[in-house]
Image (cartoon, rainbow, N blue to C red; front, side, top):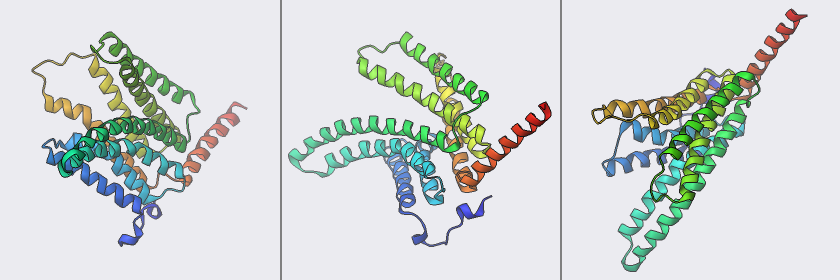
Length: 279
């Protein structure tokens, strides 16, 4: 473990404000789920996990700031969803008289903010993949091609099972977001594979596996006798484990220039050795 990456004096002043704020937001997500009686260990923790990952990255403060910006962008979606769901409810319950009518305006603004946050999350995935070093090999191209095929399978299912009265714009947006999710995580997984970062590779691989499972489930007619608890574990488990692995990767120091340089030197050494043997 890279001790320097996680060593901090044990006092509040040593913890970055961003890490503290994001940690509080994670707690608020859990509190809201409990208050609504909708708390599910896997579902709730999986939803809050990107925010926890951003808190860990903000705490570690990796030298390459693209990791920090990527983590914050990816965390934008759950943060905005929390605000968009909680603020109108709080406004409606606490404000007097006609002021309650503004709650609908907050709901409309929250819908727009959700879309912006999701787009920002895709930007974060791109930054994360680039921070890992991007994609340069044939194997990575195969992984990206696999992601495109999975995304295409999801699009085909959606087009073959249209939802009645769904506006065309909403349909296009839903399809685009699902496609970008699969391809985005395929890109990050391929980049982590090239960077030779073990925990990052495991984490991104598990999250990519979750996106694949979600698409495969579209093509499977779930029987009424299916075990819903087991199905929930199958759908949400890989994502939660993947985020935990990414947090461990950040704490281990995998988000650093040194490891990236070591990976590049290792690849260069292997390439030079192959050239010498060929000569």
